[in-house]
Length: 242
Image (cartoon, rainbow, N blue to C red; front, side, top):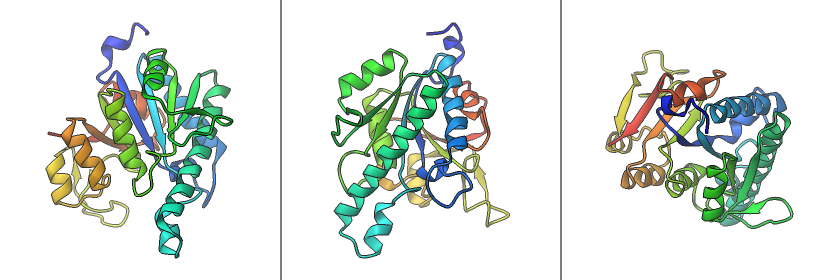
């Protein structure tokens, strides 16, 4: 740990990145320049003394719900989406390694040739050793989103909060890119998110966070350095809690 650790508001975080965040301005796939920027932000947060876990979605490559809507079997479509998250996790691991950061991919679907299997005790040990742990393949089960997987891993890893990284600086009453007078919230309760159907995360993820008193923080990942600001309590964000 570094001497900066006492200054951090959050000392162990689970960062949820959407697959779309990795594709940048492209319509599909992985933008390596975006991966490099995100890896740099994670490096800075880790260097400040925080322990960081990451869950990455797979929507930039394949989204299970869209496959099901197109007539695919939902379970098979979800498994394909999980495999897409493994690809994104490996890309992020590569971005971290290029800047000298030790990142480990742990998959809920065992594939030992590619990465480590998810074992809670092993993941905790990696975080205690200050490695960046990238959780892949969701929960390993169909019908669950990566939002739920992120909340689950945050609870399992005894994290101080789960961070939902988005393209906007918090939770709004509507899409601020489409609704000029959308109201931004600094703080919300779990019940308000559910009752107002704000769709920050799916209902199962919010309910799991509520039942385990896990704060959910929504902030922008578009601004370089924002993760470090969040750790210090300086970022513009919405905090969802009791």
